[in-house]
Each structure stands twice: as structure tokens, then as C-alpha cells.
Amino acid sequence: MLSPDQALAAAARPPAHVAPLPRRALVIGGGGVLGSAVVERLLGSGRFAHVGVWTVVPLQTALRRLEPLGEPDWATFTADTALVVFDRARHANGRDEAFGRPDPADLPALAARLQALGVHTLVVVVPHAPGLLPQALKAGLASLDEGAVAAQGFAHLVFMRPAQVGGADAAGLALPGRLARWLLSQLHWLVPQREQPVRSHTVARVAARLAAALPSAAPGARVMPPELLWAAAQRPDDDSVVDAWLRDGQLPDVAGARQRW
Image (cartoon, rainbow, N blue to C red; front, side, top):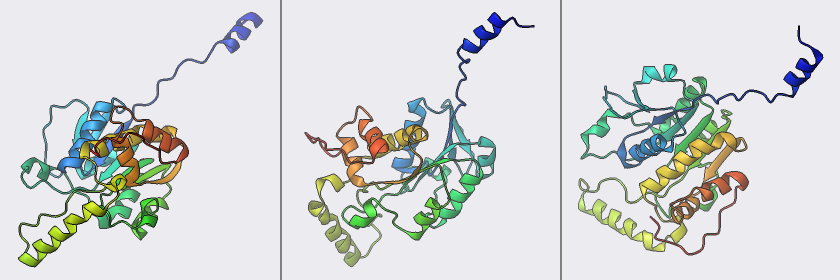
């Protein structure tokens, strides 16, 4: 039986430190330049005990903490965070064929499935053609599908809208198609600097930071405009731009602009 002094001492003792549960991130769309950069950043962040990536054929890897997952394996991976990356395939790299590529039309069903598997933090990377995204959609939902995902009630949801360099391969197009593609490519001179494309490693760095920091931010759905990615590119050595946006939702005023990549 405890004495009164022992009981008081026990009550005053600080609670034992409880280590947080190890986090797991699942990447849907880990191929391509952008998808592979996202996987690399997540592994290098040290914030996730395991990073799973959707594969459609068996894939051997020597990277620690990276787990190739067939679609039936998602349930046993028990991810708390997921990143869906829409990216062009690299035709010259056969290794990319091992990675599953999400279909934009399947996004609501995919998000519902991830939520049913226990995912509470979702980052969706949706590249767009620079200069062609209406102003109202830069900070708002761009489609009914995105609205359907937002309505599913994820604790944390972010749509990233990076401007994408170029478009589909024009080599197989007829002359009028190639001419039209070239004319459209010249529009980049009319696009404000803050809406110009940034390099894939910048997009991947921001996506990985979002995945790591969102659980500590206020809950809700957010849309990250291309201007914020441009601002993040001006400060490649820290995540203050992303952290400030998560904290107050404001676009930073970045002085002394660097090159956009």
C-alpha cells in the first residue's frame, strides 16, 4: 500500500514519454520524373518509417524503408499519408513501367479507397499548362472530381497545382498539330514569372514537406497555387515558405528572386 508521500510523489512525476507511432506514406504514381523525385524526397526526409509505392509488376529494391506494393498490398501497409502524383511517363526509361499510374478520372474512387484504408492525410499533385489555369481555380477546386474528394472528409487534404513544362510528345503529330503545339509553347513569354514552371525537384520537396507537416497544421482542404511553388523555389534550402502558408494561408512576399528552378 502506498504511503501519502509516495502517492503525492507519483502524482507530481511527469508522464512517461510516449514515442509517436511510426508514420507510413503511400505514393500512387511513383514513376516519371516527378513521381520518382517525390519518392526520393520522402525517403530522405526521415519523417516516415516506411514509404510504399504502387507497382504493377514485381520490383526489387535495395533502398531501406522503400516498399514496392501491388494494389492488393495497400491494405496491409496501413499508411496514414498518401500522395497521388499525376505525371507524364518517361518512354525512354523502361523501369517506369513497373510503377502504377493513376487515372485522373478515378481520383474520387481512389481517394475513397485510401480513406477506407486509414489514410487521413492526402496530397494530390495535379500539373497544369502554364497560363491556361483560370485565376479562380488557382486557389479553388478545379473540377467536380476534386470537389468530391474534398467532401470525403480527410483530416488534411492539399491539391498542388504546379505548372508543367511542355506537353505530350509532338513527334507523332501531323504538321498542323506540331505547328499548333509550337505556337502554344510560345505563350510562356506571356505567363507571369510567378506562374512559370519550376523544376520537379522543387515540386517534390514541397510535396514531401506537406506530407510531413500537415498533421501538425489546422485540419481542412487546401489548394496550393503555382505562385507558392515559385516562391518555394526561391528558397531551396528551407521550408519556411511552405510552413508559413500552412500556418496562415498567405502567399509570401519573396524579394530578390532567383531563377524559377
